[in-house]
Length: 148
Image 1 (spheres, one colour):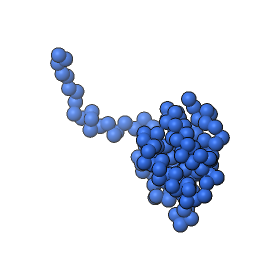
Image 2 (cartoon, one colour):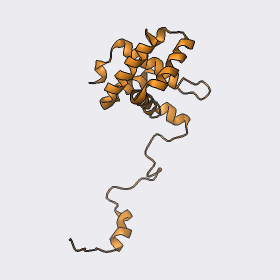
Image 3 (cartoon, rainbow, N blue to C red):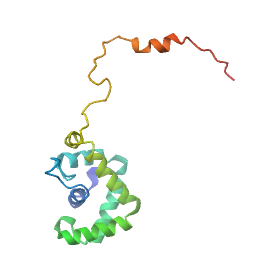
């Protein structure tokens, strides 16, 4: 099963529940987890989690008896609380998927003060073919061991 198998209603519910899990913040200048780019990342990377996410969304739909976006805020919160208590592994997977996609978004990383590149070499450019980093290893010499 792939994310392409999610219905339009499931995708809308995913966007709605994602916004509930991580709402947008003007104070920190970050989008909510319902942001189109974050949603696209979720759908593109669901992979093996698709079946559990679909099960979680189906469970939410049963609890809500209608699309989440159509519920008023108080009813949506009540459904979410009930889902959190009874959703099991599917609920945990849904929350993990939302959070992992949210916290790898560049805007969110910037707001946390995290650089958008690998931490090494921290601005130091290593020339091609410079193997001097291996000098301490080479200086130890070889070690031969008897194989049992």
